Length: 506
Image 1 (tube, rainbow, N blue to C red):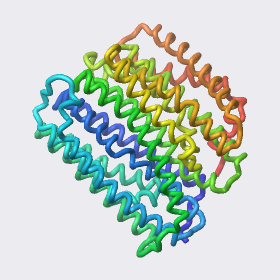
Image 2: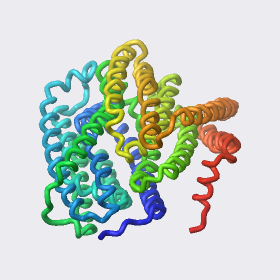
Image 3: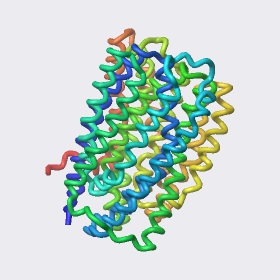
């Protein structure tokens, strides 16, 4: 039997290496983007962003299979049922092979439609079809190794993924920057992604194969009941993940189709910052997901609910701080990093920040909901969210441009996900009414809004400009909202519980 690490140790270990990997990848990503804009320009950047989002939709977020796989492994991993784990892994290997082949075929079939997704004349000096095929290959190759990656997550060894990711990201960034400086060749730049994806996938496969040496060889077929459960969860997660992919990725395609690659390129710089923050919050979700899954398997609903409240409190503190920092610092950061020609207007920046905050409001709810296997209970919700978002996108982009696209995303989230997801979680996992959750959220939002107004207007009073102004604004963002958050919450159970865990001697 392969031993599982303790929950505390797993969370600390996974969080540390995920954070380290993230810091390295983020620094390299911004350096890479700076060189990209300097040597290739904003329209190439728009093309890069467009193809990335097309492939996100094509991949259909793993058809929801990734979450369903890890969820179905929690129990056999906890019980040390090697035979069942081997059977599950064999099935997933077949699934992923089929998925990779389907994505390759569907992706290639879309080649004739590419010109219709780019408004105006495309001036990039590259064959868009060749570039698109390279993007497809970089996306597909990972699927043929993905089943062993799921095993690592099920055993709470996310730190392995982080370590390998650090190595491959360093190789990729160094290679791409070298190619940009020496050749300015976009084909070679995108081709480097295929190479490092192969390296990453092979490394994960080899490490997993050696680490879990009991999980090898032939396997027996799964029982019909297990197959039905996996299919049910996969179908439900398919709808959820496709819904998420469509809501966020179609925004970029709509912008390119109606406003052009150059506008998409400018927006993508803001989106890079947002995705960086999303990844930070993803560190928490990734680090605790396996632990939450194992906790749910034990079945102590009172304890699960208490831990949920602590994590949700932590999420709102961090999300509120991020929202305030974005509103105060975003425009200054873009201008200092690039220049004023890459700025969107203030209102558009504001809705970008609000859309990010709303997305994070759902974070911990979805970690617990997915870990509990509640994929089926709200499977229709993403359909309505996508339909509302796309319909409003098409209408509002023609009226308000990028601002309209973001308003559409916010509206679609508010009328669907923002209330349905917690309702399902509280009804089917906690067996409680969701009213207390919404009251708690209302209090958090009032505290955050108050902090935002105070911080923003205090920062506006600064009589400086340039780097000095930016640094002082950072200090204000660090001090003011966090003091307000502390004063508003230090007597709560969640704050005390979090403090005890953070400062407890181990």
